Amino acid sequence: MSSSSLKIVVSGAAGQIAYSLLPLICIGHVFGPTRRVSLRLLDIPAAQEALEGVKMELQDCAFSLVDEVTPTSDLEVAFRDVDVAILDLIEKNVTIFKAQGEAIDKFASRGVKVLVVANPANTNCLIAMENAPSIPRANFSALTRLDHERLRSFLVERVNAAAATTGSAKVSSLDVRKCVIWGNHSSTQVPDVTHAEVRARPLAALVDDADWVERQLVKDVQERGAAIIKARKLSSAMSAAAAVGAHLRDWFHGTPAGEFVSMAVASDGNAYGVPEGLIYSFPVTCAGDGTYAVVPGLAVSPRIDAMMRATAAELAEERADAQEILSRY
Image (cartoon, rainbow, N blue to C red; front, side):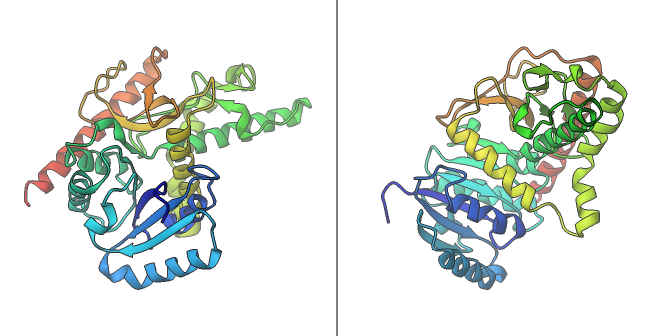
């Protein structure tokens, strides 16, 4: 195996999101077109036969960037010297994330980057982070990029609907920038288009409809996951995998100039009045070296501020519930 291989563990690797995500990693869509990877596929013992099937499919794809695929249920095998940990659902149990945090602390590379996908993602990330004290807190994040992309998608749809009546040129998601998701990856999340731009123009210049933004758009983004479950009878997988890829790609390679994205990160020292000790989604820029910075100085309206406080209160309640459960063990 090449010494330059990026060691990546994906937990819940027999699940739907991993099934959509692994090909994106293996073709270089996430970490780069020349970055070799070594994959650890982690899941519970009962899922090991399914993992062998996933391994066979990865082999049959003949991805040229893959050096090794290791299915396992052993935390030491999974996390030993890993550079990237993508933590999706194994079992609906907060103790799993305590155990994974401890394994990261004991076995992973000191520079490991951890992305938690499994819900409640923010609080699961907090549990893992608190149980890996030797790893920098800035190396932990939870996924709100899916909500961010849903927000952009709704804006594209609305702008193009307006363009159809005026004869203006249509836009794509590449034209929509500076959207924000604040807070929790839940129905209390705060989609914020105050600073959104479309082709470098303020959104309001193209969609001057505050009632739609405040009543319909926010609700649509908050409830999109539930709508997909109702329609598919399954949770989001393809879109979640794409969002994981985008999150990691920006974290490792940097955000485009003039753009910021949404990441749920430690609230320590933030300038927006969010209580410390939470994993909270903020607008961030990524430098391309594995570091990020919360975007400073964004104006927050009273309406958005009230919503930000409500989602922070929910996260504090989730934290208390998780701590109470863990105190029994």
